Image 1 (cartoon, rainbow, N blue to C red):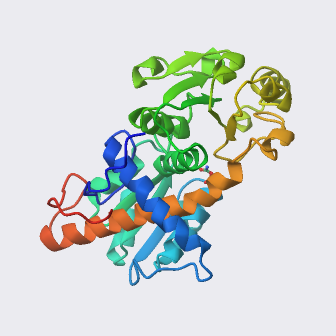
Image 2 (tube, rainbow, N blue to C red):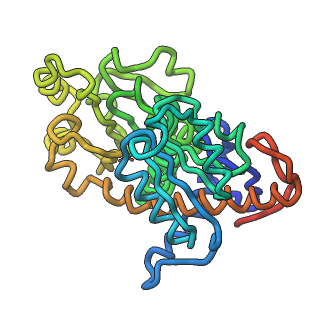
Length: 337
Ligand code: CP
């Protein structure tokens, strides 16, 4: 793998996606996360890096891992954290996303982490707000910090990303995790294969630089890692059970399938897992699985993202006090690495 170019400057006040990031920017986040991982091993797991700043978790969709991980990451950076869900806010009274976010900004917070079912929600906030905006998953579009923690885990386990073969199996069509992983992995030089029944593979996905197969055996044959995506059967109550059995038969990751492979493949999953549908419990809890390590690594990765965007926005506020939106960039100032 090419050495990380940690001399690259981070200039964005927001993290909206991996599509718009350069390879060097992705490597900078991963390198910054490596230094933050050490904080979680200390007896007192806290640094004063962002003391005095406030983060709001604004979640319009359910979440366990991402919301808690952002909260833990923020607290380890000494940020104050406020959690808002659509269920418990004036969104219930019909307030728009932009009005809600502008009112939160008026409370002089510094970072809004947003999850929304609308693709592009984080980008809309970025264009309308001075505060930093971090995308915690927008519709089917992207889930950039999930892909970053997936890549961090791959690099930690296998030492590199460049040259790896990573297969992504499951509901590619509706998956923001798949899209962010594909952008990131391809930029960092991995070979990516997507695998699903035809109906779950989006048209023209090859244009993102991936191979496509409907055969799980083919996807696993020479893969170094398989990232298994959640099937969203809960949206389809009719005939769900027979479909689940059929899916598991054809696409479920089992110990028997893994035992036939020549490589000691790593099994990943962004969670939540449907045990017995996407993979057996033996695989989820077995020696191939790095699923809980992914969750742990999410803290360091999110610390890195929060640190980088907050530092960049502080610089923007001082040098361009009227700027709003990620298109406004500071000068060539090195802030990390
Ligand atoms: N991986 C992930 O986004 O999980 P949550 O929905 O629990 O945040």
